[in-house]
Length: 125
Length: 347
View 1 (tube, each protein chain N blue to C red):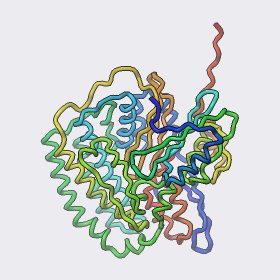
View 2: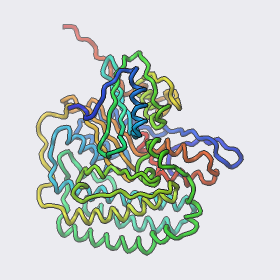
View 3: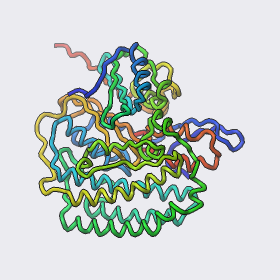
View 4: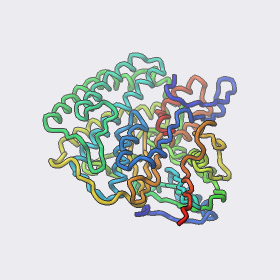
């Protein structure tokens, strides 16, 4: 089962898509990051103005070494979620409205990037 | 006085706040990671511990997300009782907040009256669920404990005492006391447009005139009981206080309605079959506002991802907009007006 009303976009289409949602007076709800092994999947969750039920999920997948454009200059509310992603996944986000530099929730002594998946060792036959 | 571990770094010009940076991270517990390591059924107990006050709604939202993903039909009686416990937690949370808010203004007698009224609600929780705050009564597939007819009558009786106490003490004070108005009216302004754009939730959003409450989606048994959000339009600390006060009365009515409409029947179903597979997002209205649960299952007993966006997390950006321009002496009152819960925020 996948999310209802999800839209998968390329990295280059993310900002225009979010600007389009702003023009439709959508409300920013949350963002989720997932480690898919060789890629990160980022989902931005929005609610459109006309119905409490109607949410829209914008999904973007990037290679782990790639950067992700921040949507926090369009929706300031996204800045905390994006900082949290940096803390937990070592994802490189460009253009954050407030950048806590990977020290938003993590202290110096905290484990690094604890939500990334450990690479599985290849087992020889 | 702010009984929460958040550090607000303020920039001041004389007594006026001109800039603010929030610093958190003092109580980060890694609960989302623990949610991947725990079996998915045990996560109910884990998510209840995200917050000591809205614990029941955390469990409810997580259970409903898993139930939707596994296509489990929960018995109607369980949905009605879930609504009752959810509203009881809203009442005691709002009264806890109002008491602390009064205390922050130096209004000790109002603090005591709020917590006195709250005790009645906690007694009802203890009687019906066996515990005052962290109940562990919601499970995947329903609930653990029933509310029988005799107990329902006792709940109605206690809620009648509660209303009398509120009518005679807390409500007239909040509506009429000049000290409260002087400290809250026109303070911490947030317009309707700002509230929407900054992603505010709960009483902050509704206190700025936006009629949005996730109970309108009809989860648990809100579809059967009916629900209309409470809205105030002034967008200041007083409007947020009035939203919460009116919600206390509304929650009482919802509990009474749920008890009268509650059908007979089972309170849980046995959940069999494969563990959850796929992704699901579910929302619920906690006392502080909308909570968002995202889960992704891979067909094993451990989830691939558990993500929780809590209400205070969403209300920090609006707070950063409310504070600049205010007097230093108003910072505690404005900050408390979002009912901050940093345990929730950091998870």
